[in-house]
Length: 325
Image 1 (cartoon, rainbow, N blue to C red):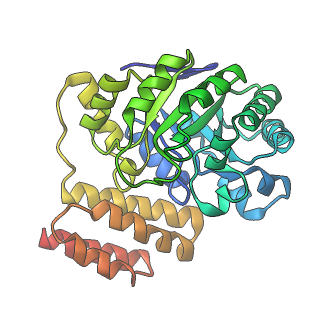
Image 2: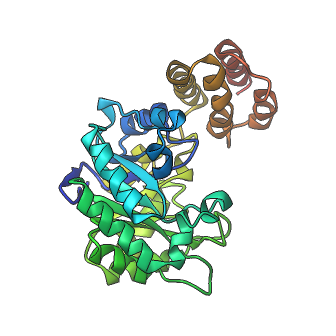
């Protein structure tokens, strides 16, 4: 399997769990690590929230020794603050391996603050942010961008070039504009164009939902790594599946209902242990809907999930699901 070098960090393979708000918490990252992900990206964290010592943000910075290497993703639009927080996190001993800058989030409350994918409209400011952070930390700094802000402003190649010149060690490219959010088809050709423009590693992102998607993206773009985000929701096995297909050329079968159920219940126990009974089980409702999608009888489970309020109820619901399978 192809290893990937990002700055002074060597990944065991080139498969990366993409950062997803409300999804990539510690329990989920550990499950993806077990299934073979070469790098785990954390949920994006606001640099200003860290600056003002937001309590909820602190819990999002938890890292387990079993999940290295880990990429911590910051978002913000002030170069000074972003640089200061990069230094502060390292000085405080937060054990991240790579520091990523979010320039791809399409959510209005982020974009309206000039952060996330809004930075696609301000390449020079983006360069100043990258440079400030690269100078402030000894860890590799990477950047996640989109194809552009909209179809009239497709500038991923320009942004990637600026990222490289400003000190970024790698760039991840999502083949959609901000205007598209996650709708429509990802444009993999823009990933190929970026790969031909810069010499730093280029990580392809967008529409990798199966192992064969990763194979096709590699063939079409020549990208150095693959970032899997929504394709991993309820499916931490996707990393194992992609590795198997890339190395052996065979397609692994989908996990059986029983395998899926065991993984989900284990995930639920980890979630509850990490976040407490009340929050943990409620967050598992969406994960359980993702896990069961595509299996016979999943629609019945999804309807019942909204009323699940304890681990015991989830386990009983899943046992019913297994009995019907």
